[in-house]
Image (cartoon, rainbow, N blue to C red; front, top):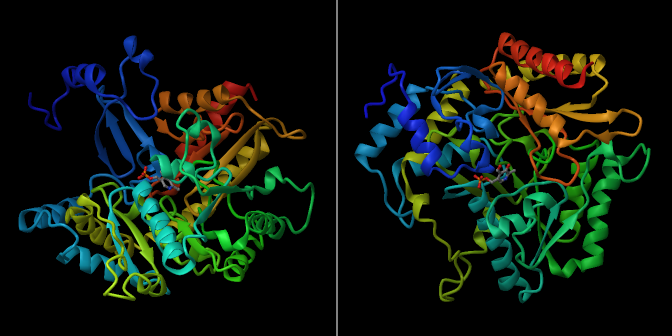
Length: 461
Ligand SMILES: Cc1ncc(COP(=O)(O)O)c(C=O)c1O
């Protein structure tokens, strides 16, 4: 079958998909009576499905990935040139795009020094956990091996990444989990655990210290945190939070690992989310936006201080990072990532994110004024969430079916938005937006208008 861009008949594709493809995060029973969504083509902010229906994409490929938009020929060209020159060699050796991308990336990350390449956000996080564990063995007789993670954060799909994930519904039925991961409280001020207080951010950070003291500081080696919690409900950090977290990490010699898998490369208006909060991380992990989904690549970035601990004693056969990722040696990833950075620079996309992000927040505040169901609006740059409630006083969350009905209404009307999705028992009530960094006011108006109309239809307000 010839599937060319001009071809209109995708019935064989849809049928093959229905019969053989097991979709991610999907209950398949419904595909016995309806067609699965099959996306055929993308250009800029838009994608088209097998029926030719056009969608304006408000979530960059469903899961905040296609940051520079669809159909970028310069990335495709860079990948093609690299593949015909050298597609692969294990990363025990270097290659041209790997070296040049790493140099470019580190220029954007003052204080950081080394880039370890692999394939997915989960895998990048696993590397960071192994680094913590190996340092615990080398320096602390194995004792300082625990890793803290935060309620509502997500760090990936593998069993150990799930062990460090604070989303109960995502984790249910996949235990038992990897030992040594300990949860700390969330920092969502809208749902303050400490009542009304003027120093919520500091208190939320101090709650981490309480956990460290309970577990024993000599047992805690690392903490993994999203700079802004993504799939857990777009939770922006409260005032004073990050400064206190940083102090606590220094006080107890705990490695600070920032998971930038979603915020990384431009989404919030700076290259990285953590750079809004003057954090000095020991490790940073990246994936989705690194190459905007044009190739699979993830990075575990460390300081030189962390790196040095893995070369201290060449006579010791255990004194190096004993880890490999086969496809971390695929040269297409860094080739795509290098061109992705160039596009963000050449088209001044960070500036666009800041300007469009402010515009989007303004428009979302209007929705809050208009619809009682919108309890809270939060975000940074082009990364925003609307938390939906039954009642603004009690803040009772809407049922997930309401959230999904709004997402479904937008989709039926040609606009793709996201939502916290079967992650929690009750808090699957946040609509999520992460349009490509190239978006215009016109695109944002269409997205917000679609949400406005969807809320009106679903909630009757
Ligand atoms: C913050 C965060 N970290 C890690 C991951 C896992 O990335 P991947 O799906 O590439 O393994 C995700 C995926 O959504 C994420 O949102």
